[in-house]
Amino acid sequence: MNNLTDGFLNFFKKETIFCISLVLAIVSCFFVLPSIDYLNYINWETIILLFVIMVFVEILKNLSVFEIFVRKLLDKVKNTRGLVLFLVFTCFFSSIFITNDVSLIIFVPFTLLALKKVERIDLIIFAVSLETIAANGGCMVLPIGAPHNIVMYTVSHIPFESFFLLLLPYIIVSVIFLLILSFFIPRDDVSLPKMSDIEIERKDFIKRVFLGVDYFLLLTFIALFILIGNLQNIPFFNSLFSQWIIGNEVIWGVLVSQVISNVPAAILLSGFSTNYEAIIVGINIGGLGTLIASMANLISYKILAREFNDFKSRYLIVFTVLNIALLLILLAVYVLTN
Image (cartoon, rainbow, N blue to C red):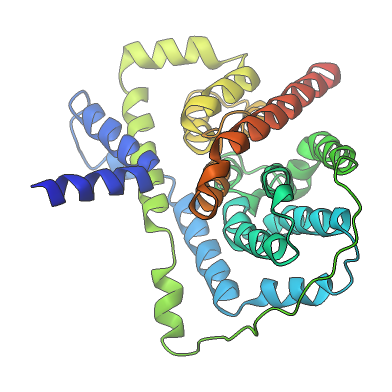
């Protein structure tokens, strides 16, 4: 019994958002009885596109494409500021194409390794905080850069270029913010030691690719689509959410993201409002702030906590202060430009 309980608790810690989404979806089924209409709740275009992207990313990961590229460029780094900036903007640019979550999964461990190799673990907290902000900024460039933007892209059918131009002011300000913070990093000489050779495992390649796909993320989306679909069919909630959300999409996108992360926030808000541009801005800005505002934030924290448990409290303080600062700045940009 204890083993079963421990197993459940461990699974809940690992897949918290999925578990909560599933429970809420099941509860909603008591108010709107299950029927064939449930299939119409689910945006299958989003599910298929996300699955294809995840398969493609797993292929790149298993071929070590990005790690090979990064290691070649690292040979040109000469000081600590250059090293951290390089790692930070690697997260920024890679998140454009492989999503913010995957970018951090690949490069945060690489960052920890690099900074340990040059004996500068004092820079780890600041570097990982900046990398997380960079990943959340870079994922705004293309709709395929993050799960919440994939949702909004498939729901809204906004063209790529319009999506980019809508978020461009926030991308520019985020980059400027990162560059300003880089001046707080010392410019000490650094010499990167030779790292172990990268070995690409060819055995069971296809199997590893498909096993690496985050199926629980797909199931989380399905559970959330069912939950929102049911809420739309409950008159009380439909009226209440519509009254609150319509006309206030940006602020609700930010607030809801802080509590349930910006992926569920995207699905929730798009179910009650068709002002997709405002929702897109709200959930992207809303990815900053608390640790749970974006799944990418949690990924960085878990990786760092696993390697440096003593850093957890200090990281939370630094991460939160920097995120809230940028969140407030981006909200000011929205107010000034609208």
